Amino acid sequence: LEMLWPEKRQLSKLQITLKFPVSFPDEKEGLFLKLILCNDDDFISLWELWQKETVFDDISHSIAGLLPLLYLRLKKFNIQNKITGRIKGVYKLAWFKNQKLIEETRKIGEIFNKNKIPFILLKGIPLLLNVYKERGARVLGDIDILINPEQAIETVNLLLKNGWNYKLHPNISSINESTVFCLNKLTHATTFINEQNLELDIHWNPFHIDINSHTSSLLLLKNFEPMIFNHQLWDNSVEILVNKEPCKRLCIEDMLIHVIVHGARECANKTLRWVTDSVYIIRNFEINWTLLLENTNFFDFNVEIFLGLSYLRKNYPVNIPETVMNEIYSLPLNKNKINQYYKNSKAVFSILGYNTPAQWYRYWKFEPKRKFPLNCYDLIDFLAKSWGLNHKRQIPLFIAGKYSKKIKQIYN
Image (cartoon, rainbow, N blue to C red; front, side):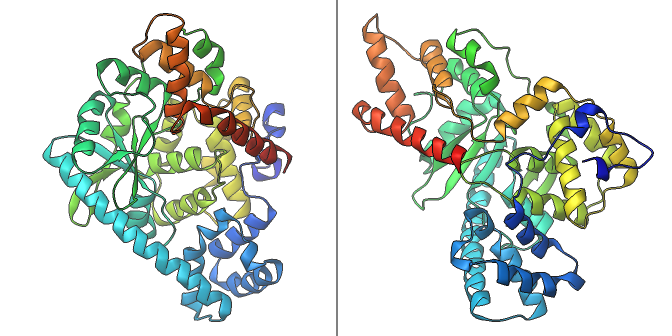
């Protein structure tokens, strides 16, 4: 990263040792991103190079999700061949599904507004409507809505009454006053699905909760401090119209932070859209960099923003002022936070599994239980339902499948 910084400044030894994590784009993915984000003068040459270097049938899931953006650039240059026809098909499919998601978002917004439930739209929908301003610009997977955790019970009950159901058996078997605390502490969202097979993530927290760093506390059933509801993030939110229904989205500075922090994490299907989302935000809006840096420090995402903006500035034509880079350089970096970030950015094998400690904590803290040893028997049944299994006898195969998949991720 040393080449990215002004010559008169020197990075600390800690900053010099930082590398872009494995969750960031690799060489092939980087070439594709440069193709869809390059200046017009460079597009034709990069398009020809990408075609030579790419077997279209072998492109990754992460690249496939951004093919609609490539189609929009090809359309601008009026380029047509056999491959462009297939790319256009991906765009049309994305546009059609996105229209359904946007209309469903309007319906949910109408319900929440009538019942006086404040909410903020996250990620895909506001990005399409306010940043890309093109409803087929990229593939959306679901609807993401942030609510106030204090209204979790009311929100969930409204969804259940209006055609939404849990995608899997709920992580906690019922929503009540005692279990809302657990939801806020150990999960950032719960997924719902409707009859049209559309998915909705209700977020109790805009950011993932790092339970990996609290494994021992979870296993020992130690109490957690209540999560603080962030009024600043809500106060800075701005209005957005979704098919004429008034909703809210994050302010553009918080949106950029959220995109980088959420998108560059390790997940089952690696995502690249955080790069395009970030570049489009920076190109199309006047960023209040002072506010962005203040909020970065407030949310304790200095490591994520330091690496994310450094990567963008190095690889793509994006204007991040040198004065801002100096300020980013000055952000305090915590060694423990750095270590945890790199651990979370790659597939890490755990004998306990990713969420088993959290499930253990949830069961013993919040589920109704019978006396020993029946409570241990009930724990097995609870784990099966929490993992979406129909019967506890499926647990051995489920665990074996998860472990084999994780091992493949590590060694591939």
